[in-house]
Image (cartoon, rainbow, N blue to C red):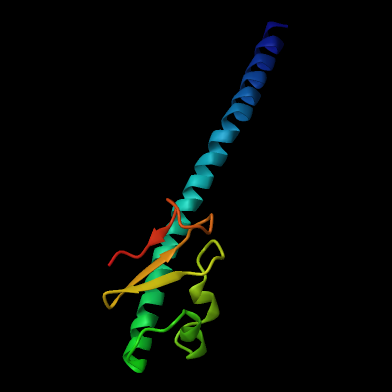
Length: 117
């Protein structure tokens, strides 16, 4: 009888631990996926930057938008989409490109991912 009660207590404790640790595990996985997507966004931004440099060299000026790179066959449509399925953004300032992803929320906010010059 004591052995049965002890085993039931161990099983109950294990179940309790599993149930209470599950939210922490999910949060860790979510955080890890966010980091992976940010790394992927930076790599993709480098590809877009290279495409912009090719376009500028060929045309002598920066494109009006990233669709011009797709229309010229420099990049594919999927190359101008970030890991959150939003379009990459760019601005030209002082003859340099500022490339960024608006991140998961698709707005200019603290989760933006910029390509460092």
